[in-house]
Length: 344
Image (cartoon, rainbow, N blue to C red; front, side, top):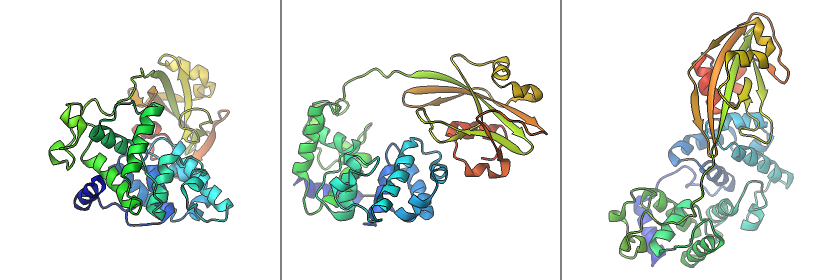
């Protein structure tokens, strides 16, 4: 009965999305990866651009990481793009045939239970329950699942309920309906209970626990504050850039001269860190910008320096200003560059 009611709601209210009209596992995979930590409204345009440039897994595998990251610029969580690229190469190394089963899909880099279940059900109609945050919230509220979702018991309860409800012959539509229902009706804040077809049986609504469910254990979020000072050093129509190393935020993206400090840096701190700048005139381009990441707060300021002569700084490479658009940069750097009058 639950599945029939849900699918009826989906027929009347489901969204028309470009990845819904295909059974191509590659396109479904790309859409699911993009939509991790990304709103549908933002992800849709990125998906269309990504598919236009990389229409199949072979095209993605043959691309350079720089090109993939550049196309991903602005979406954040860049490990998604690197994993997508690496997994495409995995597929090509295995003969170019996309995996067909949940277990095989789980073997691709960056593909977890949810993504594997989504691809397996949408592309091959394998009876897998694709459980994301929307599904967890819907089931927790309607069935009053009180165990915290970030515990083994809480995850097990949601999985079991979802498996019991899943129509084995129509897994794809059921999974799509659950996702849309969670994002359109049973929303995190101000859910549309008055339009909900399950309001009569919803435990959370009956008990006045809409705001309490789903339950997660409260853990204090430790936020580290980092102070970044960037210098856009332009020499003979070239900008000095470096590629950020592994093991830190924005791995593989490009940035200009960077001085990181524990407190806001002064002009003398910058010149001491980069003696080459003594031969230029430094000009601050903007007030400090704040950039919030999950566990970090970046407070950044930027200076601009120009020189008619070629200057060098160890670890940085000159890049033509006309080619800056080919280099993927963190969104914070893009904002600072634009304030400095650079087209990136």
